[in-house]
Length: 67
Image (tube, rainbow, N blue to C red; front, side, top):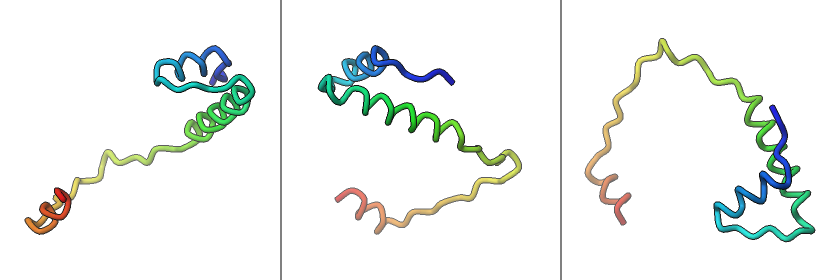
């Protein structure tokens, strides 16, 4: 996996309408690269053979979610 550059981070920040001060850019870049590395290491479980379970939500639960 290729690490993000300062230019990559600034482009994503601009697209998200986020301003990153110049003095914080190296820290933000390293944090994002660390997060991406950690996410890449997560092994997805094989769920192909698992049947989905139906989830029944009561009317009361729906009313609580709406408020």
